[in-house]
Length: 289
Length: 328
Image (cartoon, rainbow over the protein chains, first blue to last red):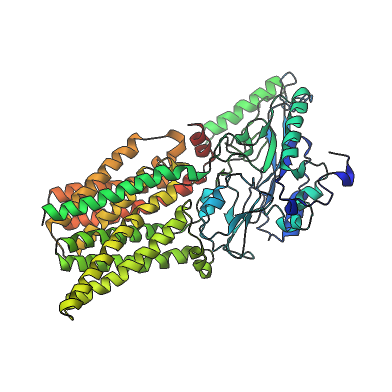
């Protein structure tokens, strides 16, 4: 909890990897101040190369989207809606018009799905599930086939282009597995000044998230909800979010599905085509030769 | 810009309103990145990632599909004692078996780590299954061709010749078995992904890729001089199936979710490909312009493979398609 100081799960040492405890991130935009310390900490600790300084023109977000060299991404939403009970002044020139306006910041990250599309798709076994339930890409095994890229329902993982360091392989958030093995907290959670990113046991965080949603709804944030697709084939995510408003506004898919659910029908069609082709060939030679 | 153009008139209006009312209300226009951007999703950013694959992959779909289905024709020809045709078809299959891995390795981000594909066998990954199908296809098609060629040379007699005949038969049928899978699994590969325009057509894709492979194999053999009725019949079959798929695609529309198939340059590639492989090839065959039918089908099959990868790039970059597909 905020104010716990070194007692907070974001700061104290842990043994989740040794104890094989499911961990997670709970990211709460209602306390995010958009400082991007998580982005910087992630890049510095993981030595992720800079992928260009471009001015997007989209609010204060010049990061753009998650990718091979962006594992934390702070979103800046500008919406014509009210934030909780906050009193907003008019934006236009006409004093009588009501122009509610709010800014929402949310630090996006790999969701570490329960049923991960990238992990299922990987043909080299480079992507694995760790003891703490996170999804990890083993960089030295990945040969850069690119199949995980189209298999992620959240558009997180990507192949790193030339001329960046370690180009050609697929990269995404590691959940700071290296740090976790040593009992340390992931870099982004460690540096978050408002504990908008909370790291901890997944069951604790889920309880905390539900509590926070209730708290916010009572204080006038009618559109606060948890984003954790447990109802779809993804079966829940380890890095879940509290969001204000609809998931679409955050570029989050409303009903993400793990692509393996399409395999059965696609293979059935493939086998039927294979059999039909063989029969067609045999019939053609039997009757026309 | 003349002084009576609409934009100048609008400025005049604004000036008059400012003069009259002392204030001009209005939110102006939505500039890119201005407050309250109206782009879909999060600033119009892609929700899923479009494929990173370049020209090697669609070309591999074409060559692998043609090679794989050539092995089917080789088997049928072998069964009905058309040894020359079987040899020619297995040459195509072996060429496909050699070119396909080269194209696949070229497209990898780290080609030297290609061998890591062979450290796992993973039924839930269409890519892994595809690699094994290709490996086994190559392992049958190349030695199968050698056996057939030795057989054709009549080097041996008696028991040895019998043995060679059996080996050639087994390897040819083996390459046909894995060849049919090689030609069709590519539809599963892109059909079982998070790209809306692909997974919405996961039933159509294997049928299209497999049949385009069969038609291409027959067309290529016809162009190589094997103008026999059986290949013409297969050409009819493939063109007829492709014509049906063209109708299927134009009926089975999912609006915004699969608009990449019907709009943009990607939509045109699909349309051109389907018309060349379907109705046009059919009409050429009806008028006995067999070489034209063959060329039309081959070009169409190639264009359509590039079209489907282009569809993936357009559809994957379109956040509205992803939202629409999930709301279906």
